[in-house]
Length: 375
Image (cartoon, rainbow, N blue to C red; front, top):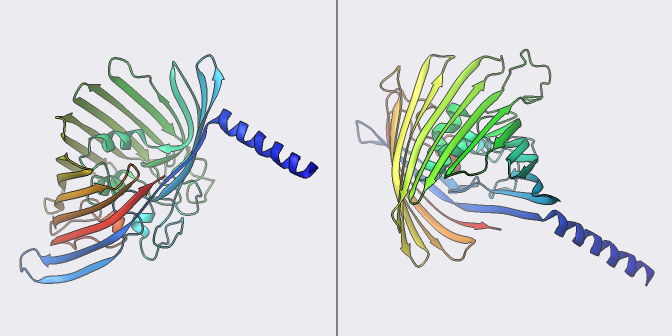
């Protein structure tokens, strides 16, 4: 009896602490199937096909996390967020998902909470956040991409190889060692700035430069009625401490009721090899009613030095919401690449895994179907 009373008291204490801290567990599971076939851009000869399970997520990444707030009084709150990624194909939480290295690298290898691990304070002054968090410049792109940086057929597929530094950490998407400040919304304007200086990179704590793999990033947004505008910039340093990449994005959207239109322009300025990659995209999302929505988008990506280093992609997607948390989806895309296209322009299909995209100089047709559930 005494043990039972002690156990009940312990449970009551834990429950009380959880209420005070307002801790929430959340996540997303996205699983589906993809198929891609290539056709020679000039010859019209089929040059190969790929298909398989999209374990990294066909539309949204697979992740789980914990977040919470504590009321400190006088309008001041403490906040925290822990978030990790996994494969719906194998359950693995690193980037060794049966050949899906390119996609699962979005969840850095060996990091339990590779997407977010931060704590901060918020109040009337805004929000200050310290630790692993999403890059502010990438958030600006996500808000104006008509596909919302989905795992397949979206602007994510150019940002990752250009502005994202892959390896033990993924700076440029999930920034380690970042301190950021987000302003309160005033007259429709919101801004965020952040600076990242990770203590380690690829397991090496003895970097040759104090600026090695550092990031500086910021964004500003404006919303007034149906109109929304956004701009952002991410400035990165490589492992040698050299300022190697600046990504700049501008874009906006307009809500017409059932139809929402969006468009953007991004420039990736690579100072190491003196090249610039630019991308523009536009499209929209239409609510058909009864839980059904459609989106369509077009993306054009090219490098300034070689006019044949380019790609174009058009995509149409449809979703059917079965509930507020569960949806079925399908999407179809057509892609073409120039004869000199490389990883910075060829729009690899992230959700489909490493190597699944059009070959150099190839036209391609691709589709994917799946189910997504959030909790």
